[in-house]
Image 1: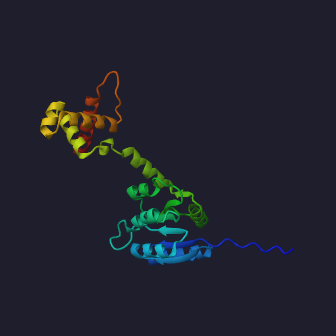
Image 2: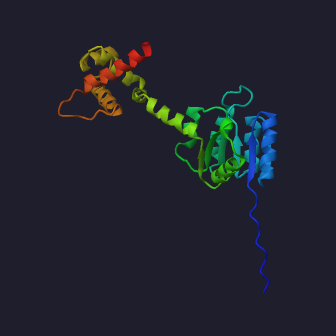
Image 3: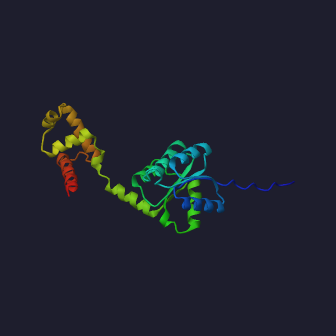
Length: 231
C-alpha cells in the first residue's frame, strides 16, 4: 500500500496596505521569505479595498494613515474589511494609536484582529507569530494600544450618553428649576420632563435609594463636568 506524501498547507494569502514604498517593499520581502503569499501590496486605501474584494485574502496588513489626506484612510478601510468580509483577518500596523478606530476595530468581534505599533516591533519572529495568530482567529494587541484603550474607557464621560434634550433638561435642573418650570421652558409636558429625568438617572447609573438625592447628584455631575471644561 502506497501512502501519499502529506500535502503541505497552502501559504496564507496576504494583502498589504502601506503608503511608504520602502516599508511596503520591505514587508513584501519579509512576508514572502517567511512563507506567506503576498497577493498584492497597495499604496492607498481605495486600491486596497478593491483588491481585497477581488482576491479575498486570508489576512490584511494595514497602515492607519494613507493618501490622500494621510489621516485615517487606512484604519477606516480596515473597518470596512471587518464589516464586509468578516472571514478576513485584519492586522493594523501603524506608528499611531487611533483610539476611536482601535476601539471600533476590536468591539463586538475580537477574533482575527491585531493592532501593532511599528516602532515597537523589535523581533521578526514575534511579528510573524502575531500574523499567524491573527490569521488563525486570535488577537495581537500591542501593550501600549491596550493601555491607551483602557485609559480612554476610564476617561469616558457618562454625560455623553445623554440625548440633546436630556442634556437640556439637566442644564435646567442645574439652574434649580422644578419639573414644571422645565416643562414650561422647553414647551413640553411635565410628564415628558419626568421621563427625561428618569432616563438621565438611569444613564448616570443612579438607582433609587432610601435617601433619594439623585436630582442633586445629577446636577453635581453636570456642574463638575462644566467646571472641568472651563479650566
